[in-house]
Image 1 (spheres, one colour):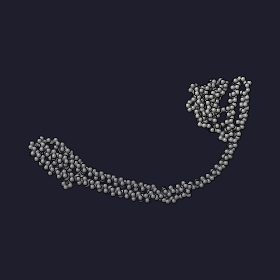
Image 2: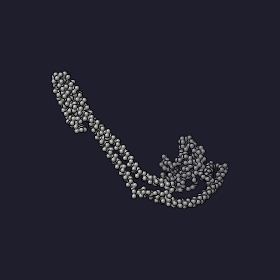
Image 3: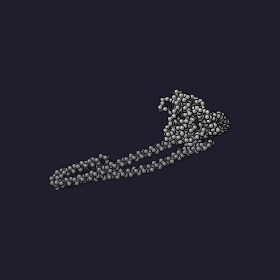
Length: 526
């Protein structure tokens, strides 16, 4: 059985072999180039040193002639030039020489350079002896003779060394050119070999693999489109062949599951149809219950409205009667009438909710004088507060402004807070109502000095059916949950706050904006 793993291993081994051959060729080329460049550099440097030595010797000869013709000869300049010549010749001998002998001389270059140093030393000694002569003409003749002798002896050696280094530079450059040509040919050959190898590997390994992988991809796309009867030819018995066999088994399994899902889908549709019928029946039953609820609200509202109408009529008759003398009795009847009228309004609200399809309460926004509303509310609760031995006070700003709100609902909220304080504030001695003005909002504070509400229960008092002491509420009242809803519909807020002036009791803060955003029709389930 052929193996994809083996083919890939062969591919990797071939690539590694090509890489190693390329690296070895590159290393050989680099070393050859380095050697040729080093030879060229050494020869060029020695050629420059020999040229410099020739120039220094010329300067030395001119300096010797000038000293010979001078009235008082001096060796200072000659000594300095001699030191420079020695330094240059010594530097020229530090690098290794290219050949064993100098061409045309059959002498080692080291020996010729040593003889050149000896000639320079002899010349310097001869010139030193000539400068000691007193006669100028004799000095000049002696020095010229020494220079001529040096030229005959050292000139050919220096010329031979220079020519030898020129030949070495030429040979080094030719070696570099040949090396470059060989590297170019080798690079072209390596590139051609790499291309041919890549083509061969692609034809033998990569292309068949890609063809089979493409077939698998096409089959997967077909299955994704729902053609679950798609199958592939296994072909070669290798890793990819095993993958194709598993792919075919997967396709068969998917076809079986699809058939089972079709059966399950049909059963589910039957079940959904049955449940839908059950839900329709349940909805019809709930609709009947809702109709019964609406009838109940209508009946209760009717039963409450009838006696309230009688009470209002009796109060009107009593107030019109001239025989009622005590003003307190008249005031009491006025309060009774006011309360009955408000209860009548609430019953009308219940009746509207019962008759409406949406079950919503409608708020009537108008411009309201909060100061007057609070004064009427406090005045109406003063007798009740006195009966409970409580003092109720009202603090208003000097020039209070108006707000746009539903006056009746705001009054109900404040009355509910005062009523809660009277009935639930154990140990309280006073109830304070405060109105504060600001440019954009008006704030109402209702506080008492009673037992207060524990911190952990302050959030729960705004839940439905929860009273101030944490238990279930009783009786018909506005409730803090409905109060919170009313204030929220006014785009305001109601919170349980602490009174900074007292250490105990409860303080409820209501904040209302100056301008409302129009009538609000939002439901509150009763």
